[in-house]
Length: 148
Ligand code: FES
Image (cartoon, rainbow, N blue to C red; front, side):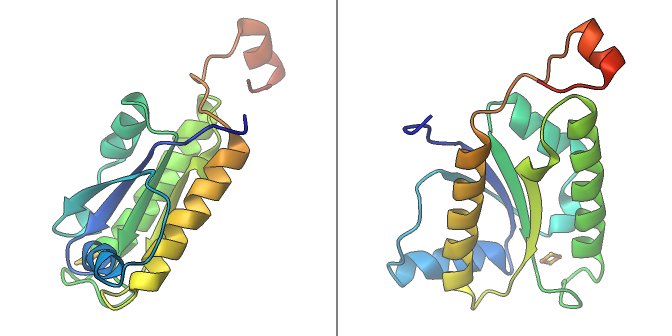
């Protein structure tokens, strides 16, 4: 799948990751155009359903990017987001979709270069995993614990 271009949805906190993405743009940093950014007031707003819906809507990978640990403007939003990302990983694995397709990152608004790096990292990882399957497993595979 050499020409596979993954679709990546990024849930970004307005205070940090979204500003970092903006900074990356102002710095004219190059990063893959595969990412669609959803701006949130805090990553604590991310619900597991948002992540699953992004996959349902065709994303091959999803990442949540919040403030640095201890710097969330709503105190613990980014810790809650991390727990939800871990839970989403588990749910995806349950239905036969690789949990690595969803990740959590922490960064500050000054980290434009890091934002570009994250998009590159995620794009490379998802390219390696290939297009997302539909999570379908036959009855036999379910019994044997196999994945598609
Ligand atoms: Fe940025 Fe909460 S305000 S993660």
